[in-house]
Amino acid sequence: MPRTSAEKRTEAILDRDEIFYLVRFESLCRDNRDWEGLAGSYLPGSPVRTTWFHGTIEDFADALKAKTAAGGVARHRVFPAKLHQKGDRAICESPANITERLTLDGVELDVMAHVRFHSRLVLTDAGWRLNSFEAIYESDSIRPVNPTDSLPIDWTVVNAMRPSYRFFGFCEASRNYDVQQDLLGDDHPDALDKFYLAERHWVATGE
Image 1 (cartoon, helix red, strand yellow):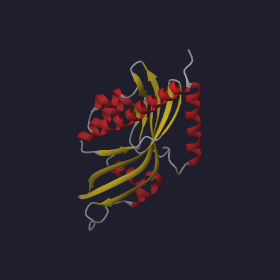
Image 2 (cartoon, one colour; image 1 turned 135 degrees about the horizontal axis):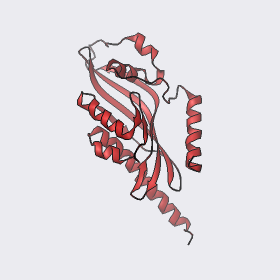
Image 3 (tube, rainbow, N blue to C red; image 1 turned 30 degrees about the horizontal axis):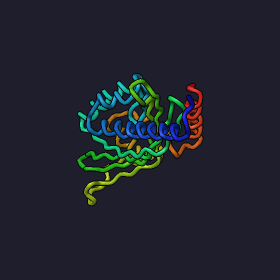
Image 4 (cartoon, rainbow, N blue to C red; image 1 turned 120 degrees about the vertical axis):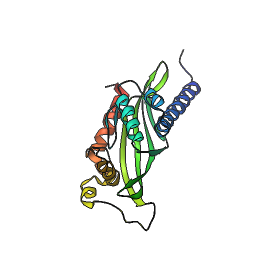
């Protein structure tokens, strides 16, 4: 029996609320060291890509656990806003801020990135699950916690980074992470347009 327009609207609202909750939940799991909850938010083997990591969700949870144990504690504020869905497939994009307090060369620093988090999602028997994670970088900044301190920055390294994540990239490189220079960002609009086209094609066709 075909659904009425009201039934379809109700189903769409419920799907949106579940997806938006899942996106916020995944971020909270990262920040609160809930590695099981983090991995369980995804389908097994889902790809994850950030400034410092590229691999599966299982490996990401393990790597994030080790990074946190070594003192790397970032915080993510996520605001799910855009959803495109067809049946049991969807993509969700969320404006977000990443903040981290760290110490370099004895100087305590606050670094912040303005980003958008983008994920594919698939409806399973257990509900919606994430099927990818990509950060789209907009801009970032860094400042000393004590404003009288000088920034311990190697500007040669900073200026070699992409403009959309130069300070986060510098901080990750200073901790010996391999920072990728081909990440999605507003400073590479052609690559971003191609990415969005492929994501919408996946929602429409599953391919």
